[in-house]
Amino acid sequence: MTEKSINKEELLLMLSDLESELIERTISTNNTDKFAEAVCAFSNDLPNYAKEGYLLIGVKDNGELNGYKATDKFLQSIGGLRSDGNILPQPIFSVQSFSFADGDVVVLSITPSPFPPVRYKGKTWIRVGPRKAVASEMEERILIERRSANVSTFDVRPNIEASINDIDTELFKAEYLPKAIDKNILISDKREIKEQLASLRLYNINYDRPTNAGILLLGNNPEYFIPGGYIQYVKFKGNNTGGEILNEKKFTGNLITILKQIDTFIDNAIVTQRPIPISNLQEKMVRNYPNWAIRELLMNAVMHRDYESNAPIKFYQFDNTIEIGNAGGLYGKARPENFPNENDYRNPIIAEAMKVLSYVNKFNRGILNVKTELQENNNPEPVFSFKQLTSFSVVVTSAIKNEFVDSVVDNVVDNVVDNVVDKKLNEVVSLIKQNNRISASMIAKEIKVSARTAQRYISELKQNNIIRRVGSDKTGYWEVVE
Image (cartoon, rainbow, N blue to C red; front, side, top):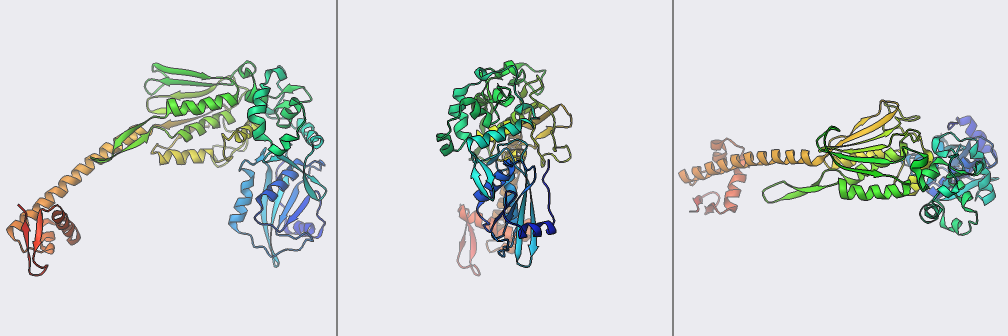
């Protein structure tokens, strides 16, 4: 199901109708929480109308317009609700703006989610007649049961071999649950552990089994059930896999544990820095790779990989490059011609979990931010390989080698410039010795530079106490200090 646009005639009918479970009106233009709660409620579609819900901004309760004038900035901010990660799983909606004599109307057309319950900042919002409310446990259970009919992605499927005993429930209660659910709701949550897991799509009540996402995130031994569910790091000598193996490490276990280890490993074992001279008296520290960029590329591999493959995530380090690769090429709406501007999620529950755990800040911005980080650190552009259907990889080149080469070139250029300037300064001194009343314009002509450059040379000689002016500018003369 995809989001549906409306036309002006349909909007006029909505304005004349009463507010209902499918229509909400508001004159607020700055209450982001209100907008997000409405998106969440329509996405959950508790009555199961299977129809779009509409949030009409700039409209009074009685259907009259309040004179609001929509701006591009406002429309962009509304569209940002889709990907800022506060509504999970990601909602499906479109944004339109209509102009009337009495003002503008901004319309959000929200499609019911195939994977309810949808939460905004940990709360499940629903429509109860013409108003919004936080779902009760029973209402949330209805949404969970409805979702089972829409199971399609690997991470949502129940893992038939596993049981609740294969889940680290203490880790769930201590690490994940407090971050995923609003604290006030959690205080009154008396559900048993299976139902709490199920509400976050980590357990399937119908099958009484953990989902694959539950095993990956919280499993005691995920690799037993998902053989390729680990990250393989290898450091090679040279610039290809034919070189001697200098270091090797296997990151295995549940993702909550692995992702913490990856953070520490990148900081301590991957990122190095060294001083690079930028002048005779100055140097600056340069990193081979920006921490955040390498971390983001690994998180991207974890989030988007095909876990039905037995191949692990590949994290290879060479003398001058790092290669990160995972099974599974571009997915869904993402294509070679629109990468990285378009994105889709092979593992929506894993993506949601990584947002909950703060390993992802905003959806669909990771690759663009990586490019910015690398550019600011003076790394070359990353090279992506995504045309194969079964794999995705990226190669990042170290900045230290390139920075070092650049600094050597800069020093050579600086030395050449310094030699040229020194020669010109000596010529100025020689001219003054020959004619101590020579003017700056005459000096410029003799040494073939501009008048301004000649004046700069004279000032430099004066500042270094090599020459001095005796008397006035008009009647005085130059004297070379011996």
